Image (tube, helix red, strand yellow):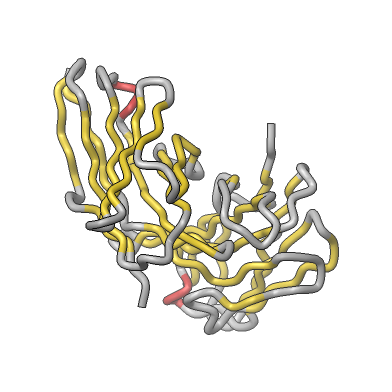
Length: 114
Length: 110
């Protein structure tokens, strides 16, 4: 079975702190994604990557950056956390090369920014 | 911009009845559609998907119907069980990106 692992299930950070959310997948998938999930807004795409060292902006990239140094790992970075970034963050991966296919999700990282 | 919306935020059904969750999408170029189930505290889990060259696809107790003319997607769950209680998301996409709807909460009454 595909496994997408997010390193932290729950984090509490202070405003202005730098936050790293790590995601690792074990099925050699080309594509990786970061979404945030908020009540009433569904899942919104922050960034995605089709290959190592490649990244593309999603619908809400402001305040975030990403890093993909290895194929299996995709990190989401909040350079200076703000309270409006309190959310559930979901990492996902898919195999489809430059196409659209099933996303395999991690269990999520719930971030609270105080 | 592109959008995907579900018709009802909450659906309540009796155990054993069939459930139908509806979804509308805006981008006529969407060529891939998928339904996810999300239980409390967990990540979304795949239920069923369908590509734009099909109108219907069946899985175990689930059926997805696609009407490209009116840009409408539905998920049918047969003989709904208490374990089906969850939030259901539809998503539509092309070129690798999926746009998700807001989710419908399915409540199953015993």
